[in-house]
Structure formats: C-alpha cells, structure tokens
Length: 253
Image (cartoon, rainbow, N blue to C red; front, side, top):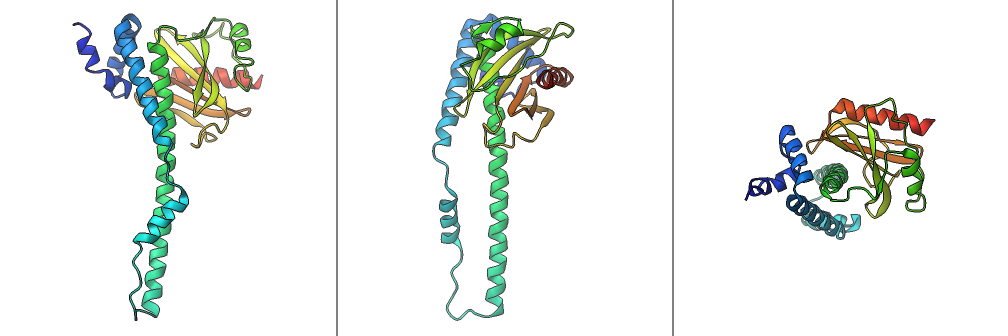
C-alpha cells in the first residue's frame, strides 16, 4: 500500500524527530489521508495515557529520604573522632548535592513532559477530522464561545493587517486543567496557541521561554495577566514571535 511507507515513520514523526522538510510533507499527508490521520491520533492518545499513568506513582520526598538513609554506610564500632566527623560532613554534602541534582532533573523532566504533551496535542489536533469545535475567523465569535467552558477569559488580537488568520478553537486540557486551544493559519502552516491559568503545571511557567526549538517545532511561552501562553508550530521562529507579539499586545489593550 502507498501509506505503508508513511506509517513506518509515524512514530518518528510523532516524536518530532524527522527533518523539517519531512515534517511538512507528513503534515500535508495527514490532512489528505484519513487512515494515517486516524492512526496518528490513536498513537498520540496512547502516548498521553501512558504519560498520565506514569504520573500516578511518584516517590514522595519522605520515601526518597528513607532510601538514602538505608544505603548510607553505618559507623563501625570504635571509629570515632575527627575522621568520622569529617566523613559524616562529606556524606552530608554528597547527599545535599544529590538532592539538588535530583530536584533539577525532576524539574527538567517536568518541563519536557509539558512541552511533549503540548506537541502531542498540536499533532493530534491537526490529524483530527474536526480540529476545532468553533469554526470562525472572527475573534468576536471565537472568544465568547469559550465563556462558561473554561474558568478564565482572554483577549484575541485584530488580524486584518497581518498575515495570520484565525481558524477557530477548542477546549483542551493540561494536567486536568481546562484551557483554550486556538488554531491560526499562516500560508500552509497551522499554529497552535494554548492558553491556561498561570501555574497550571509544575514546570517553571512563570519564566518566559523565547522562541526555541522543541521536538522539531518552534515554541514560545510567556505569562501575562494571570494566564500562561504557549505557541507551537513548524513555521519559522520569526513567524512564531510575530504572533506572540500580537497576542501580547491584545492582552495589554
């Protein structure tokens, strides 16, 4: 079958590991092939289920401390004095260093997991036959549609003098918190804009992330007015930054 060659690369595509030109070709294929789009959506949903299951059992700080204490060397009878005190001090420094390193790794993993989940949502939406629940290019239609569906309000920019066009929006969830998922179009590129209450994730969302490359997508995040924004797309970093500027301006006005 013609699609067999595409399906062999589907997992690589979903992991964002294809070169940029191949990602674009895969995006176009998913929009025209119902079989591959359904397969992509099913795999993304399976990935999210696995990620959710992995969060259910997180070792508590008390459990980690008990493990560290169980592996600490026990003092031998008769070993006293300055040497033992020095060893104890060195061990305390080592444990503290391990704790800091472990905390940093946990935070990095949490951040990467947030970005991975949003990338999955972006891909799954583009692969869906109904990517948005409210279809409109009019911000005055899209914004009111979210009232009563999410626990906050937001502003949308005027796009008449820009290259961007609004496709519509849908309600989405990140760590069981409802948010807005807006789809914009720029030439042949779809752009996802996610808006959630600030602090929805355990990652450092209060720290703005300038346009950066994540999983073969360009992404930008920032917090403003009690909300956290994330833009993700395979379009250029300059285009992502332009749309971010429009959204930031609308939130101020």
